[in-house]
Length: 412
Image (cartoon, rainbow, N blue to C red; front, side, top):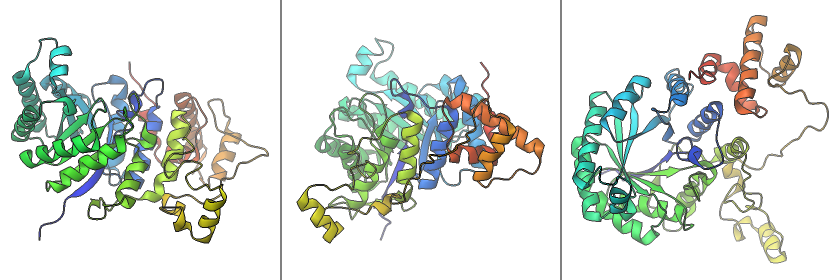
């Protein structure tokens, strides 16, 4: 009996999430997101833009971090336009890049009204083929081809585009519901036909403009599996992303694990839901965007009961009114806030206060020279983040000072 296809998670917080208007992440914060995703067992992080110069040091530093096993399982992939020249330039700037997604618009709306006559249907395919061919030549191990605006692309043309991508060397096709206009019904039908025709794993990239992003992502992944191939759902921590956002990482996992009718579909067994609380709280702090109280799994009210009937039922047996246990998301431990003396490490810290902070973290330095070096990096990190560092960031800097130094360095 052949092995059943699986559903994997490819998180795009560090690519699509940081494109969200009015918010941003520092390079240290992006690195920490990769670190948390790795601990959570997420298969892949689309960690940035290889052609964006202010990302270069961060990208190379994170690839180095993976090489020394600071990131143990996660694959780090870059996003590029599907042009031969962009691929060439990317591999010069980030030579250890192995996983990439190449993106080009495929709908008539985009071809006619975005490219303005520069490309037509056939030249879109030709541009994509040349870009994929160059990536293969330069040593890319996994190449995903993104059909931007796939949900509004003629299906016959979309299938032809995907087949040509496969012939050129692509290992996956990303179906992008760029405007969030699909419904679970339309995306299931379209992806099932696409997956059956091309016989490649399908990446499902959805937006939340109609409030259907998680439902669409699950339906698309299910269609891919029903066609006999693996699926990769693109997620963002806390549902960040352009306009109304991308598929929330935790909501997607909850739907796959506990949704009715999903028991015969197999989520990547490496995914550890117990990291949910930690990564969502960190991302909320880093983005400066509070978690809504009604957010599935991690919102303040996700396990709160007030009405008499609900409180009585939950106290008798939590299964009466709770679909899953809060412990499964890493919740339940009390959050302790210090109300007395508090020494913090900031951009103007001195050595004594700095040592006090690290002593509380049970981090010891071998000598004064090492302590002074880490202090200098912590100062830069605070300038970098423009907010106090959390304990995991402080520990990261102490453990990987050379990586941190590269992340904090930009060369205009």
